[in-house]
Amino acid sequence: MSYERQIFEKLAMPTREQVEQVLIRTLLNHGGVIKEFSSGQETVSEMADELSLSKQQRSAFLETIYRKENRLKKALLWHRLLFRAADSLAHQKFVSRPTQTFRLIGRKEWMLTEKGVDEALRLCNIPDTEKDFLSIKSYEVQRVVKKLVESRKPEHYDPIDRSKRITRTTRESALRGRGFRQAVIDAYDCRCAICRLKIKSPNSLSWEVEAAHIVPNRALGRDDVWNGIAMCHLHHWAFDVGWFALSDDYRIQSSPRIQALPPDFGKMDGYEFIGSLVNHTSEIMLPKRSEIQPHLTAIRWHRENVFGRQNLICRESFL
Image 1: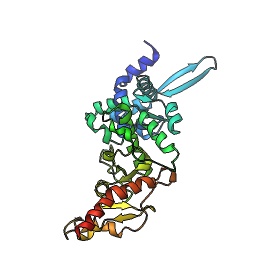
Image 2: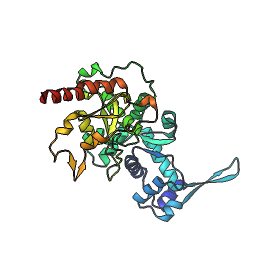
Image 3: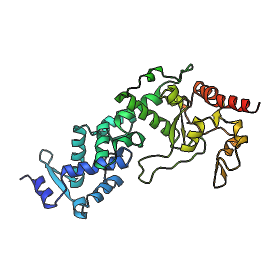
């Protein structure tokens, strides 16, 4: 039996397979990414806690003698086991290595792949149907996000994607949809562009804010950042049904129908939710980079084809 194996058995260290499962679950709980392992790192301690490692198990060193250099090298046994588990997961294509992730996003992190996300959902007993609604990064989705946010904003932009008429969902279209949601939500710092609300679920797996299509999916709107705005559930709904639109200078244009609402409509415990749209005169919150701000072509389409139709009905109802 090797010296290393003797130490592992003497200290009753967990198996590599056990560490792999904890690592995948930890990645899921941290949005799909964690930094390279280092001493004092919070996630390293978090995984040790989940495995109920003793103080001795966490602090034990493995000693290796470099005979040519006649020097002794010490490595934390727990870190060595963690690295081996991560390396095994990378070999199985469950995670990307920090060097791969660095080339993609400029940070040395372990990141779940799509295969890894599926495995994490299985281990955490989360239905696959919830995958599209979770704020979990994957290597493949990040590649889509990178392409979306680094594309040059076109002067002439068609916000309608006529290829969407093909209703069959493919892996590519699913990744594109998740990439769109992540790119838009990240661009607005996970806040609603209208009310600035920012909150996530207690388990941190999903944000309240949504990526709203300006030209909606039903009208074959593109999955581009220029056709998206981050909004809370209520403002997303109000925008989609035409209670408000955006002007060319990104200010709210409220529907005249608001004035005709019954007194008890559009309120939340006295707060004028719909009525507040009338008084919202400042520019909505926008991404700092103009290259990923909503395209005026998309805003004008919504103003004419969603909001405009509501105004037309409104005018006719008063004739």
